[in-house]
Amino acid sequence: MNSVLASRRTAVLLVGPALLVYTAITLVPIAWSFGYTFFSGGLIQGFTFSGLKNFQQFLTDPNAWNAIAFTLRYAVIVSVGQVVIGYLLALLYIFFLRRASGLVRTVVFFPVVLPTVAVSLLFQRMFQLTPQPGPVNALVHVFGGQGVDFLGHADSAFWVLIVMDIWRSMGFYAVLLFAGLVDIPDELIESARLDGAGGWSLVRRIVLPLSVPVLLSSIIFSINGTLKVFDSVVALTNGGPGNATTPLTLYMFQTAFAYGDYGYGSTIALMLTILCLIVTVFIFRGSRRDLTKG
Amino acid sequence: MTAVTDEFERAASMKRTSLDSVRAASRFLRRLPMNIVIVLLLVIEIYPLVWIFLGSFKTQSEFLNDPFWTLPSKWDVSNYISAFTTGNLGQYILNSVLTVFPALFLTLALGVAAAFALEILVWKGRGTILLLFLAGVMVPGQMVLLPLFSIYFNLQLTGTLWPLIITYTASGLPLTVFMIATYFRAVPRELFEAATLDGATLLRQFWSIGVPIVRNAIFTVGLVQFFFLWNDLLIALTFTSSENLRTIQVGLLNFTGQYGAIQYGPLFAAICVSIFGTLVLYLFLNQRVMKGLAAGSVKG
Image 1 (tube, chains in turn blue, purple):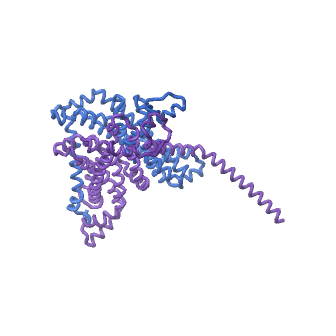
Image 2 (cartoon, rainbow over the protein chains, first blue to last red):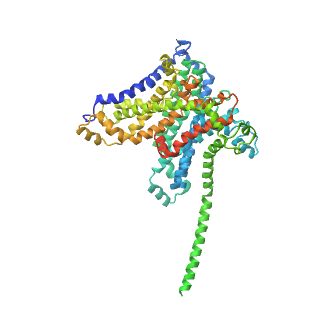
């Protein structure tokens, strides 16, 4: 502790401004938002104390349960899709393209940086039926199907959303998992090859077990991101048709800003935060058990 | 005698080359399915962009009457002009620039200073504060929006760009502190200890040694934060109360509303402007962007 780098005064001077902004704009609002959950009302009509009424309402609100169900279904499917396809791409980069993988990696990654709104509008047009069938409906025609109004039906709208978000992010997870695979020592793979392991069995017995840690962190990042999905839903379907594609984030946004109910909106936001925490802890726990078993 | 061996060798080498070409052909066939997969992959990634780019030159009647794969009849930029005049795209881009860049500068300035204090300096409680910043990465934005709305409303900041700048600055801090602190961790402490013995104050060390040594990292983190802020919809949607405050994302979301009926040409042009702006940045800095975003993946 008796270091020449010990100076409380300098530390406070350097960390102070950031901490001040962070406290005022993030920490205090989090506590404040928690306080809102015990009130009903909003900015315009004023707040009245209502105890646990918001939580009771949440438990009996069919829309809230629909939103939870949608959020979980979306998060699980997209996370599995992102990580599995990302892992397959990473294997492709390492074992098939090898040194030539740079260009493909760069191209597959680029949708990550594109604005979600623009991508959503692009996908609306790709999947359109009118005024002229878009590329996807044209493909449906080629294979002898009838044109589909993809975003007009709950089921197909859900899958368009899934396809779009996997398209956007698979390159990101490919690069993340690629970095994990590169770290596996070459000698290990070479010696496995000499022992007669090749192709699929090499992947299953050597590569896959060694990439468990990086796969696990990918899943945690992915679940954490997908539970908070907002931009792509708002821009692609705006929760519709009806409220078929409304996640918790959007339901909270509508409750607070369309209906002006801050108390209930904050309750939904709190539930979302708790959901994120539970899922992360759950995955950590599950993984630890598996590691001791293997 | 020599002629015979020459003949023999020629025959052998011919056999060898034909064997080689057979081997090459079989190798080609073996790799063919995967190569098709790769070509398909590239088409899936690139075709939508080509399509939207071509569409941005089409007229409304071409959109209504011609199938999607037809090329535009002439290369006419009137859709782009319409997107900027009637569609108000220029104003939206300006708003984005006016909010994102000040916020980016503030986030980096505050974040780098905090990261230096939390990682290099030795003081009681630094672990706790670093954890406090880390927690902010996890919490969804919805958790802070409503109180912030009340705060800005009471401070009478609604109707200006300040709510966006302030919120962006704070929202970028956790990840900036976390990432820059990681870079500082790799810097040998002896560097700073030696500078102390040479008589430099800690504040001066921050400025003359700390900042230059993580200069590259600051650029990378800035790039990552730029994409997060530029592409943000949630915060922008919450705090842009009037039309002339809209950022490019909110503007694009409400774009068709500017026209009444959907005008496909200007819409495609506006999507193009939005996409190709970030794409150009990516074209020049892709390795750095990929590395930076992967390092910032905790944000999910």
